[in-house]
Length: 116
Image 1 (cartoon, rainbow, N blue to C red):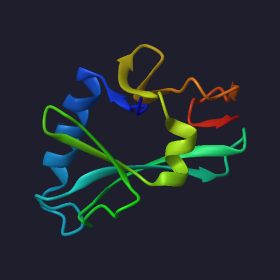
Image 2 (image 1 turned 90 degrees about the horizontal axis):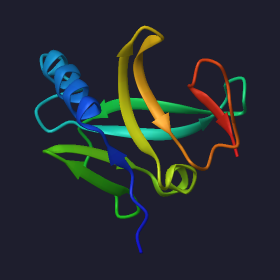
Image 3 (image 1 turned 180 degrees about the horizontal axis):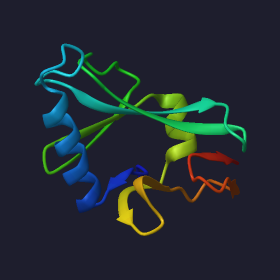
Image 4 (image 1 turned 60 degrees about the vertical axis):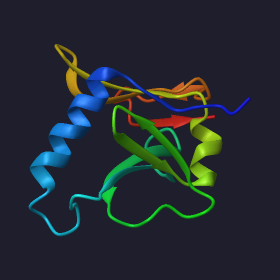
């Protein structure tokens, strides 16, 4: 069974909003996708990186889609993200994307860094 990365409805809405506000920029045109990566750094050792790109996904990328929003993840990052739910919070505790990552053994207080 292929493990998935899921997007909540709130995450889809925010990605669409951000994409619409960036379509005037040459690096985030109509064909842009949201790329999610895991990179070294942060107070727990690894951190999440999000960004729009126009590049066509490679053969080794994993592509997930919900309601027309495409999420692209490289194969190395996918190992750390399998089973993750990407949500968006705009509550009293702050505003931003939230990674509900079952692979994270420890996270930092800001929620943008983790370790496995």
